[in-house]
Length: 103
Image (cartoon, rainbow, N blue to C red):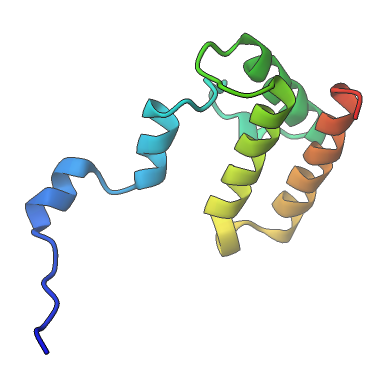
């Protein structure tokens, strides 16, 4: 059985360290306001996501779906590094987002 080869180090350096950053910058994701997930209140996070979703030229789906997807993407990428308080705040932001979009 042949041994697996590791990718060349310079390939990784050229692509960048974090694929999620590249996805945020180049995909059909929303154009978010800076520091949106660091806001103090769930309502502020939800309103910022709503504004971004409604203004974005890059999104392919409905504003609600795009905003919710971005919030879930952030939560999933943060994973275990997300504190319990921050996770509660982001879950509350989901509820606020549903209210803002009337769902």
